[in-house]
Image 1: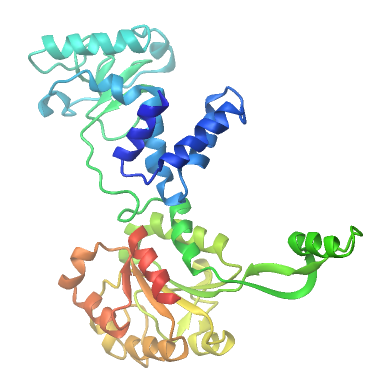
Image 2: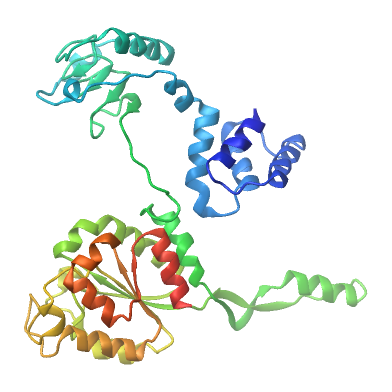
Length: 391
């Protein structure tokens, strides 16, 4: 069974070696974990996967192999016409009516019946309790209700009762081209880590203690060192409002990951482009602002600067005094960005807009020019490239 699992991992493009596979077998032979599936999952992941960026693909292969859901379902084949699933009505039931609807009786029965329906059904059905359709109590279809069913052609969950979701899904490589969430963003940000030892000696140096004790004839000689911490300093400037509302989720994930990864992090908000003032609380942005010059004077030149924004606006907002959509700016946004770059030579711009749109948006091209092409897409690959540019 584990041999097939190993080959599935390799087929999924994971760099799992035979040595790592043998390590897993040895760990099982030594009974390092109990008999639970969770214990085996964490053991196998620890033995076979060395890069956190590959965890998501490992999870998919693990689920497909050991849970058997995908393989079992793939045995059922057939095309469900789009017209059968078009929403023309939606079933709404109260709790008492829902309790009166019975399930088919488990996974095997559900899959067997679905295969029969795919073979027998020839036309659209709506509001029924048997066929693949919409707005009914059948176990198969969309916009209805059943205690246990297969959701087909419905964009999102309504009752969270589906045992299976059968839709056409288009995937791209998860590791380097798609926004994947906080955990994977942290993996990319860690490239910027640099550790230092400063301050009072408060942390036990185990290796030096052992070495010194051995040299001392076995008499304990404790050695302490200053605490090791992340010495990288980051200034994060975040665009908010307007077109950035479409990118709130990924920006929140980036912000969360950044705050947990860097001990020395300062952040400020701006709208569309950097001007003479910034703010830290969007609820008080009209009454509580920080002059950009003060920020530049307060934080030393050894800070790394990360701008986050879609750079999508009127070009006038970048190149003209008074171009800001919210206030009259005495100096152009370009002048302010260039001033920041002179103080902080290590700076990048992360753009949540797909790279394919950049060359067709005048303001993005202008921003790239000002940033000396240090603009990167807000994807894992883009983050990785940005962190390399900052080191």
